[in-house]
Amino acid sequence: MDAAALAGSPFLTLLGWSVVLLVFHIGLQGQLATIELGSAWNAGPRDDHQQPSGKIAGRADRASANFRETYPAFVGLALALATVGDPSGWGLIGAWTWFICRLVYIPLYLAGVPYIRSLVWVGSLIGLLIMVSRLIF
Image 1 (tube, helix red, strand yellow):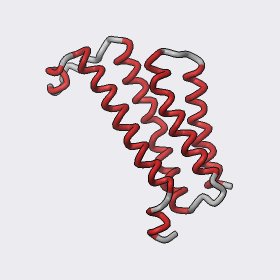
Image 2 (image 1 turned 135 degrees about the vertical axis):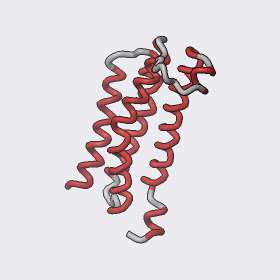
Image 3 (image 1 turned 90 degrees about the vertical axis):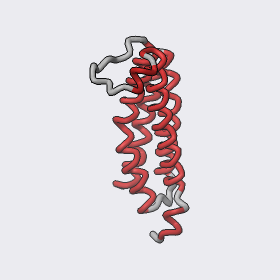
Image 4 (image 1 turned 90 degrees about the horizontal axis):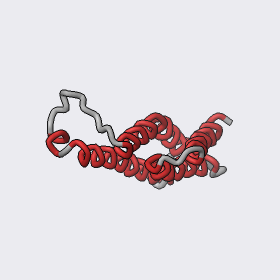
C-alpha cells in the first residue's frame, strides 16, 4: 500500500478519535478524583497512594482501566487493517462497533447500569473479533 492510500485510510481517522476517547477517559477520571480529593492531591506526588472513595470517581477509574485493557488490541488491529486494506469494509464496521460501544460504555458505567453495560462491553469485543476475522480470513 502506498503512503497516500495509507494516509487516507479511515482507520487512521478512527485511531485519532480513539486517542480523543482515551484522553477523555483520563481527564474524566482525573477530574472526578480531584473533585473528591482536592487539587493538592492532584498536584502532589501521590506518595500515600490515596484513592477516591466515592462511587462516581471509582467508576470512572474502573471504566478507564477497562478501556485501556482492549485499547492496545484496537490500535494494533486498526493499524494492520490500514496497512493491508479492507476491501470488504467489514474491518471498518468492526472498528466503528468497538469505538461506539466504548463511547456508550462510559455513561452506562458511571450510572451503574447493569446488564446493558455488560452487553455493550461484549459488543466492543465483537467489534474487535470482526477486525481480527478480516485479517485472518
